[in-house]
Length: 121
Image 1 (cartoon, rainbow, N blue to C red):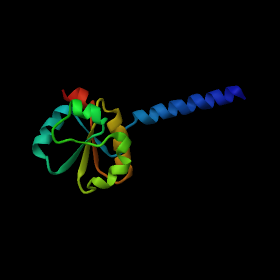
Image 2 (tube, helix red, strand yellow):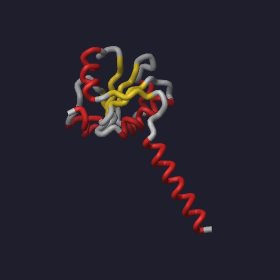
Image 3 (cartoon, helix red, strand yellow):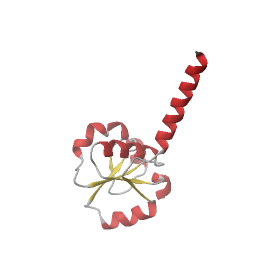
């Protein structure tokens, strides 16, 4: 019985890891260099959201990005316009992918910045 529970636990962990690595469907990806071009062209046509903590955001952020920490995103969805695409960024791309999943489930068009702030520098 212990062996079955162990295999089940390992299987669930593997499933969780795979699920976290797979991109959500219909989430666009943009490179850091393409983001720089995008910011110049479409400032008012898209919503730019930085999902890092307020301390991370204050330390270094991209002009034009608003800070909505990942932990607060669900509570602040009503502050976003569903008629405008949302571009999300974090430090490395993991939290912004989690944010993209939340936004996608709630009917937003989403683009994730690959590599996050680490790649933007």
